[in-house]
Length: 130
Image (cartoon, rainbow, N blue to C red):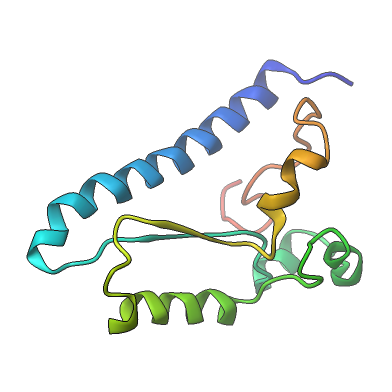
């Protein structure tokens, strides 16, 4: 099956939003840094949260085989990064988007086909009204 126009549109909206967050983080950090305020963004990969189970069955073992780190991230993993970024240890980290994904982005060019149709709808099954 080839991608339909609606499949491409779904990807455009998602990708555009992600790109906007990266650009917003960079530009706002330039305004805030002289005031002593550090602005950064966190870009998580698959983080296993309760809503995943509401939306569909999750085979953690099978999913982990597709992640270079060998496991699905947990909210605690992202929280640790956020605590670091909020600490004085990160005083020189400004305007960055930090990817925390177990290595998924590193293998992305080597897997899948971006032309494959999008089967799911983000939020369907756990966001009211979708």
